[in-house]
Picture 1: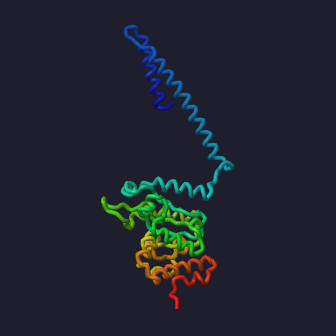
Picture 2: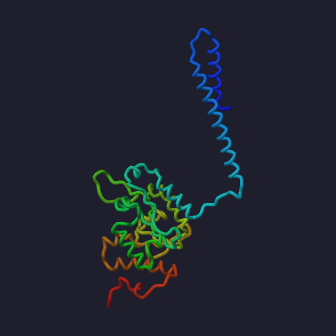
Picture 3: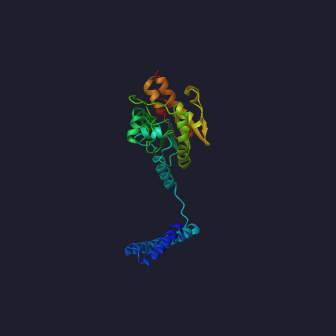
Length: 275
């Protein structure tokens, strides 16, 4: 018997004693109402016990066990990420969480640092000017944006002081807090290769704090997956020289070779000075 039931029983007993005393005025409807409540409580308790027994039988029967598909796990991860409130200052500043976009079964994954203002409004990574350039790079490699997967280390736009515009890089603490979501994304996607876009992404992924010029052009590892670092597309928007564009493209050629994708002569000669 629950404490609530015991309490009701005591109240009923007290009211019955009051009813037997001729010198006290008593409203019999109170007793009727309390007894009705006791009946409802007993009925609810019986239903709860029945539901618990059914649930226990489902859990203990292997034949009824349900194994979630990879897509279902991915959807669950997305819902958990969208509801994240681990960083109150980011929650208060963001418009929405930017989970990622593309093919959950992609063989190639691109990882940036954090959403900017455009991404924060649209809920999709790399949709501003840098995103348009990344899309052109992906298409020139022979993929569509829908074939690859694109995500960021940080899923929320870093907050800015009141009255300040632009974007700031995420802090090491912010990236460490958010990294488990990206780790789970990578574990579910299982890409053959990843491209880290910019030095901040490399710091978030691997804890490597070196200039991009010393990181790019050679392979690194994240959870056993080869990672090719290269300049962030926003860097190429600031530096329009063919030399810098060629460096990024050389990194993408290494990616294509590692994926054993066919490379045309036209692709090999992009951004080379014409004689």
